Length: 281
Image (cartoon, rainbow, N blue to C red; front, top):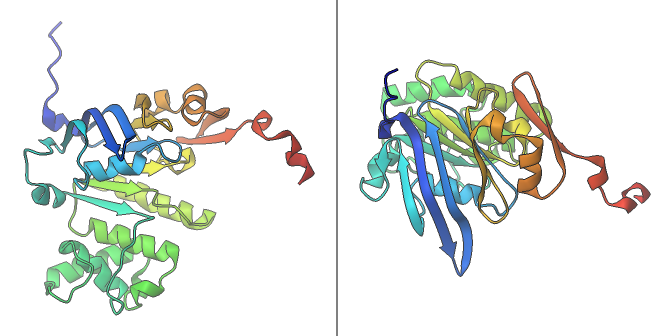
């Protein structure tokens, strides 16, 4: 039997080793290690305060860890220009503020993704760039809103616009931080279906999603990282091995039952976890 080949750095979209982040005397992430194979979808799950969003911002090069090493798309942060790396990735944060120019339209907001800006006041998009924007507006079913001011869009419409903005320059890595936050059930499912369709296209980006809820994880997600409230790794590896009842219960410190249906995971708290006086409400 031939010996297995040693994995190369380029075999992984992300490679996090012993990452720790401390701020103001508080440890937010503690000794986190996770590898995600290039081309595989990933998910980061954990309770509030577990450092999920912080880890995503580390991957995007916006925050530097206190200790450990981070490789993104085969490049070690600190040894490669972050500006060059950001041309190959995109991050969308549902809870972040996107203070677009008040006069900017949905179509123009999508086009700002080419320039990493929140206005087109200083840039002149080409005809090819406008065409790409129109294709994405059509793909995300918001072409009818192309001339509507971005600031007047609904939460769901704005998220579709931001996703189109993130994809406009065809990134290799797409980081999504709670992209369905604040969406009703039909809007959430519609958005997840669009993301699943993007993953099925030719040469799609690697998508890593942060969520509190397993049902929001895309069906063919291969790798998962599960954190607890202390920012520690509870488990990492194949999603079906990480998203189990026992591991989710340990991460959230709450009795949780996990089931899988049609490739998607679903979780709920068991009945005996409710306060005894809940029935009086």
